[in-house]
Image 1 (cartoon, rainbow over the protein chains, first blue to last red):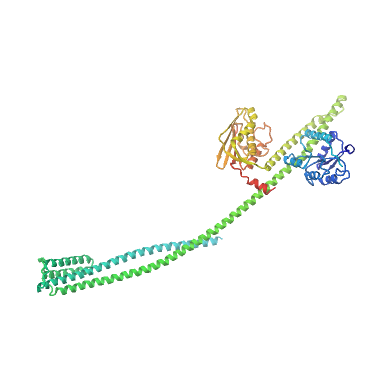
Image 2: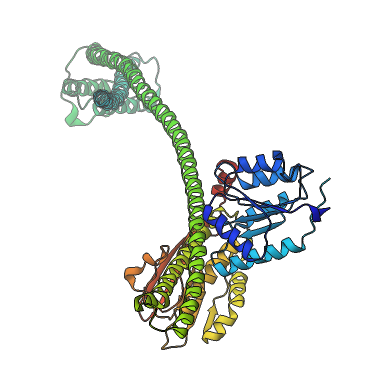
Length: 145
Length: 494
């Protein structure tokens, strides 16, 4: 049952500033779930697929994914996650500076659940994160067998 | 290389000289053949003439002999053939003598013999019983006139035979000369033909060689052009990728600047609230400088940081927008320009009405094979600019016209707005550059966008303007968009 397993938030974001802002806003939105922060794709994938408490082996999770990472593209990580049947239903929120339509479309095609452009206008950004909080509170997390 | 060319030129000049000489000689030879032929003909005529003289001499002798015969016949009374017969002979004789005199008048020796001949003939005629005029009877000159006539005629014949010999010899000489000259002509012809052949062959070879060289050069050129085009495409793609990455990565720090500025602002607001509460309860417990910092300095700094970051964001967005423009796949198709312009003005109708502007679209306009979206964007930008920068002193009037220029078409958008300083003619098309009073919102992106689109469509854009009078933007586009560049881009370079 989901009540017994706390939802982990996995944030893959190489920019420390962005990570801090996202975290602050999430907290401000009243979400207190654990946030695991990774600054590169390799360690994030290792956690997602292999870690004891990672979403592959254990527990529901939400993944916040930046597309521009130093070691790989966020879309590669998205593809890996959506190609794995046990992770396919894990919600993935893309958070990036790109508002390129083709890239957004590509991410949705790969199965991302929400795409949020990191907006310049801070009010918009906070708003988006707050909506993300609402999203997290209403989201129906998949049961992990 | 130049030495060879010089040698070749000398060789050419020599051949040309030889050819000229050869042709001149041929002409001379042909002329002399003509002259010789003429001479030979003349000689033949002379020979015939001599034959005729000889036959006249023979006729004279015959007639004289006949007359002598008549005389003998009269003496012996053997026959009498009558006066008529004698007259006939005499007539023939007179005729022959007259002919002879006529034909030999260029020969004084023969002419000198005529009086003697006439005397003897008169004698014979007299003896033959013919009526001879008295003054012609100079007496009997010879006992045997027949003998004399025969001798005289023989002398005269001899004379003619001599002449004949000379003339035959001359004719044979002429014939020999003719043969020699004909031979010479043949040799000359052969020589000239050989020269001409050599020249033509040399030129033909050269033409072939240069044609081959030209073809090779052309092929090389084509390859070079293709290579250059590929290089350019690669460079262009690289620049676009570069622009994209740079502007993308530039936005990342801006998010932080904006985000943490908002954090500072929130903190400052909390501080101010705290300060106000503190001051309300216990005034003069906070240093005035701290108050100034919290109430004025920090909000001012935050506002400047935010305004600059926002501006930077707009600029980066503009660059991103332009770079995306180059990546968009064009979709050209045939469409009537007139309808397209109307679509644009319909979209802008609210703006046009608000400005109280009148817009005139010339008709007819040609059809274009073009990406309609790009052209609509260009026209919308130009018309929007005309509305934005209209003159406050007069009612705005916009004219949209199109003129065919062969395989291109010139589309002009003319207004009676405030105009652009001619010095800024090129500058206005640069990114982030604007002209005139900065009283309208904007980043200086529109015309850069327009120019990028015009280039993308294989066209150009120009400006003709005078301050306070108005501006005319002229867009020159190909009637048929050639998407080679795009094809190359799609097939070869990422």
